[in-house]
Every structure is written in C-alpha cells, then in structure tokens.
Image 1 (tube, helix red, strand yellow):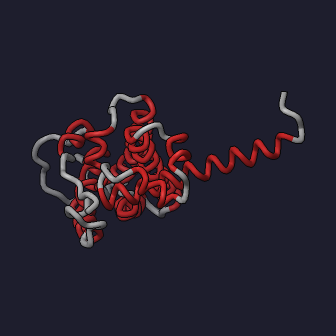
Image 2 (cartoon, one colour; image 1 turned 120 degrees about the vertical axis):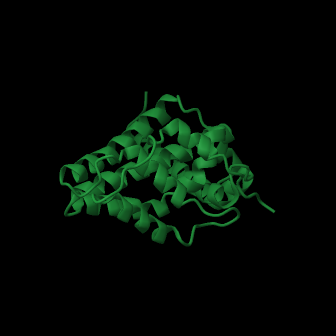
Length: 218
C-alpha cells in the first residue's frame, strides 16, 4: 500500500519519466531528420541529456523508438490541423496554415523510416494516422463546401503532397524551398482548376514512394 508520504515522490518520478520520454522523442526526431534512422542510439541519448539505460527503459530498441517518433509527429500534425480549423477565418486559410506548418513536423524526412521501421497495421500507428487524416479531411470538406477548394482533392492528396514537398534533399537538414513549393501547391488547390489525372495516392502508396536513402553519420 502506498503511504501518503510516498505519493509526492511517486508523482515526481512519473513527471520525470514523462519529461525524459519527451526529451528522447524530440532528440530522436532531430537526429533521424539529420542522419536517418541508423543514427547511433548513444547519440540520441546524448542529445536528450539522458543515459543509455534511460533511453532503453522507455524504448526497448530502434524500432520502438522510430515508432514513437512517427506517432508523435502524426499527433503533432493532427493537433495543428484541428487548431487551424478552429482558429482561422475560413477553411482555406486553415489549410494554408496547416500546409506551411508541415515544414516543422519532419514528416517528409521521416517517410523512409515509415517504410522500413514501422508496421502500418500496428493499432496505435493506425489510430494516429486515421485521426490525422480525419482532421485533414474536415478541413478539406469545409473548404470544398465553401467553394474555395477544388472538389476532386482528398485528404490523402494533401498529406502526400506535403510529405513530398517538405522532404529535404539527401544530406540536408531542411528543404530551403519548401514554403515556396507549398505555396505553389496551395495555389493549385483552389477551386479554379483543370481536371486531375489518375486517382489520389493512399497511405500504402505513400510508404512505397518514400523509399529514399537517408544520410548517415560520417
């Protein structure tokens, strides 16, 4: 039985563990973007300011850490989409905010890891992905209903386009032209349009198109 005097200490330990987990995920995201999924886990622990034992206590192996980062990035993107729709004056402004914010999510650089290191059918990953696509879908539906977004666009078109345009060139930490390219994408999404060829990509196809070698540590 936990004594009353033990509760503050237990709460502190839980808070410390939560902070360590967040620091590891943030450090791993930055390191994965910079060097790819093969970056030494020792380097991630160093960047997070924790010991190797702490890292492995939260993430048993590289696959678990990649999974954690991908889920965290998707959750961050979903939160951005929902905040944009709630706070912007119209749905296209929300879409624009969401698209340009994607530069900060690292989703393009993480695509190769989704292909190699994650299980698409993992329940947590599948749930997080669906929540993200649903949030984007709400923006798309609202903008189409207002007549400002072309009617043949889907949320998968948005996610696929964003992930491709923000991906940094091989060996680079960021795409310096991302915002310019994203604005071109947005302009092409407005209601005045030519008919789109083919069908929109789905998440399985996105995984297949993300097979790009990542930069490694020297």
